[in-house]
Length: 254
Image (cartoon, rainbow, N blue to C red):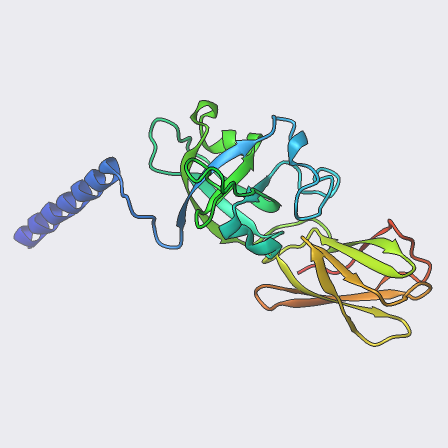
């Protein structure tokens, strides 16, 4: 029994030593369930330049996203289909620049490619890149780094309150901004229903703005919202019959 305990102790020490060596030397391969990318930042600490992004959310502070946001490179933005998705990001493989913190951000903007500058433009395809708000970048890396390698993964979005619908447009055309979406976050399909109509398929205009030419003035409005993971939530009579253009109405949440 004593010999067995001695050998068991020896192998445990050996195993722990190998783990320590692996940790100190670093791994060039991303851990399971994480993907490798790079991150930069744009704007100042107030986040002014991050507002009114390509996903159409407008004032991110007012809409509840705050400064916990990121712009995505072409490869990740996917023509706007990824708008609203949430990512967990951490700096990786840079002892000089990395800070020991993880962040969770929502995709709200697009980092455009520059094909006239094939070298040094991190947002050119096929590169996976996050252009973070400055406050988020400084949580994971030293400001002077400018650009750092990161690991990222998709995570469920956590939002306060229900899905929100902002109604824009005119009597001939209705444009619905869908925001504050929890769960997968990225909306892939929206249907609208007036109190006197059946369900009407909406089409994506840009970002998370969805449109229809149906005349629904004077009718209460219901919505079906479907996300990339296939989950759908139906919110009945979200907007009353006297809804107004520019109004914001809150439905159920995922």
